[in-house]
View 1 (cartoon, one colour):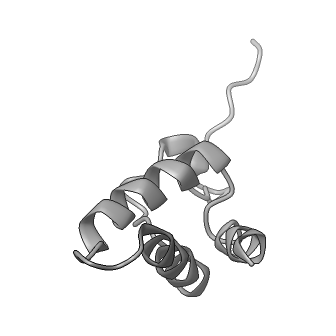
View 2 (cartoon, rainbow, N blue to C red; view 1 turned 135 degrees about the horizontal axis):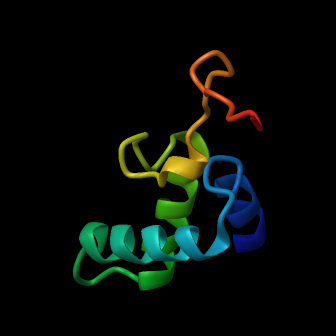
Length: 77
């Protein structure tokens, strides 16, 4: 079922809006004429479950893991 594919894809993309945007872009690029759009969408979601669809550079800075020794804390004077 498609809900299983969506929950599987959300292991790599936790933001639902971003998942929808990435899935629609990938579906447009991977769709072949004379095939069902639903099958292409299911294939895209299945691929998202297996791999990370975004690279680390495309994520916003708040989503990247930060090492604690690199973050400098400001202290009150």
